[in-house]
Length: 149
Length: 259
Length: 118
Image (cartoon, rainbow over the protein chains, first blue to last red):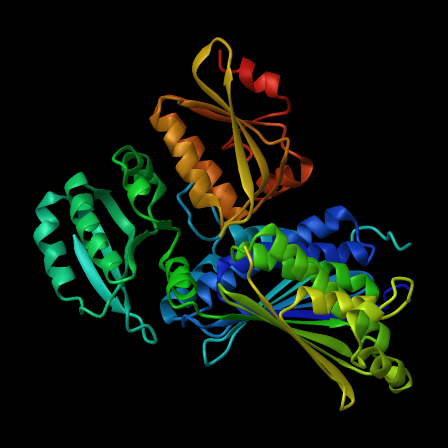
C-alpha cells in the first residue's frame, strides 16, 4: 500500500547534539520511503541537522530542555517546523545577528554557516520568537523533480 | 585573565568556571582562589575556555590536581570549548590526553547528567500508521541507543523489538494519516523502556486479544502467521505488558542493557 | 557518544612530511572534537601536509566544514597544506553553497592532490 500524502511525523528529543545524527538520518529515510530522490533526502538531512543544531545550541536554556521537530511531508514538498523551549537574551541576540547578516566563511565564524546553508537549500525560512523567547523555525523545501512511483 | 563562576540551577553538584584571557603561571593564584570558593559538595567542574587564548603547562598541572580532587569525590573536571587556534599547542603539552574535552559546556553537562547522575532521557515519536514508516522508526531507535553507548547487540535487539511492536500496531490498528502511532522511549545507562500506543481497529480487536492470551512459548508454532512477533518480543525483553482495554492499544516493554 | 567516523592513515612514498588521511562516514558536530584532535596530532608530529581522501565521506555539516577550514588555515600557518580529493557531489554542493570552494584546496582525483604537493 502506498503512502498517502500529506502526512506528519514529529520527534521530541532532549537538547543534546547526540540525538541529531539519528534524527537527521530518520528524516532522510522517511523521505526515501516516500519516493523522494536520494539527493532531496540528503539536502533535507542537512537542513534538519543545521536547524536542530541551532535549536540545541541557542534554544535550550535549561539542562532538561527539549526540542520538537515536526515534518509535514507533502507530495511536492517537505515542511519542517522546529520548536525549542526558550533561550537566553544573549543567545537570541546572537541568533538574530546571524540571521540578518550574510556570512563570510573566511572569517573565524563559529556560527552562521549552518543558517546560510539552510537558507540556500530552502524556498522559505521563517523564524518566530515569541514573548517568552520560544523560537519556532519553519522551513519549506520543494521537490525538484517528480519521481512518484 | 577573568573568571566567572556559573551555578547550574538544578545541578547542585556541578559548576561551570568560565575563563577568558590568558591562563598563564601568573594567574595560578587567581585560579586557586576560584577553586577555594567552590563548595565541597561540588564534584563536577566544567572549565570553559572558549575565550582563552593560551593555557600554560603550569596551569594544566594545577587543573590536574583539582581533577584528582573531583575524581575522589566521584566526579570529574572536564574542559569545554577549546578554540582551534590554541588546540595544536595544547595537544603538544598533553592537555587533551589528560582531560575529557567537550565542544561546549552544554555537551559537558549532558555527559554529567548521563554518566554521573544516570539520568533517564525521553524521546517521543509520532508517526502515521503505515508499514513503510516502520523501518525508519526502528532504525531511529536503534541508532539512538548506539549513540548513547549501547552495544551493537543491544541496539539490534531494540530494533527488532520496535519493529515487531510497530508492525503489530499497524496491522491491528486503525489506518489513516490522522491517526498516529505514539512511541515513547525512556533510556538511561542501564535500561530502555518503550511505550507504543495506537488507536485500535474494533474489527481487529478479537484477533489481537486472541494473540495476547497467555500460552506457553513452546505452543507457538513457527508456521503460525501471527504470534511470532509477540513471542519474539517476550524473549528479547525483560518486561512486557499490553493493554487493549480502551479504544487504543498500549504496549510497554523494558529492556535491561546487557553489553 | 559520537556519530561514527573513521580516519585511516597512510604514508605517501617519497614524501616525508605528508600523510594521506581517508575520512569514512559522517563528519558532524558530534565528532569534530575527535577529528580535530587527530588532525592536530598529525600536524604536531610534523605531517604539515595532509591529503584528505573524501571518497568514503558521505556527509559533512556546517560544523564539520568549519573544522575543515580550520585545518586548512592551521596547516598553512605551519607552511604546509590541507588538500582534499574525491569529494562526492552532495558534500561538494554544501561547500559550494557557503562559498568555501576557493578557501579549500580541492582536487577531483587523489593523484592530482598528491602531485600538487611538488
